[in-house]
Image (cartoon, rainbow, N blue to C red):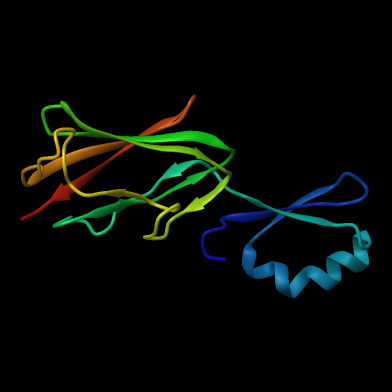
Length: 143
């Protein structure tokens, strides 16, 4: 699928091949002929914070991300002064892509701070936090 950057194929003889997703359908029969019927196909996903949507956010926003391994996930949101306005605990998530606007996928933010008040319009930063990983991106909150 479009979310997979590359595919790793482990073969019987301990050879590992990395190919593009569009190649897998076309080449699977050739790979099976060359390496036997015991090839394993594994999607390689790198941990990554993606751009929130919609951006600018007016009423709500979703924060998509990808995980290379199972992790406890949280998002911290900061104002332009670097003050934390909200922490969203997403809990334990399995390896995979969380890019859809639905519960259990991308992280939902209702544009409210810890006190339940809507944040003002402006530039905000959001940080994906895992045990040994963090990444930050910017978003705009509009009226």
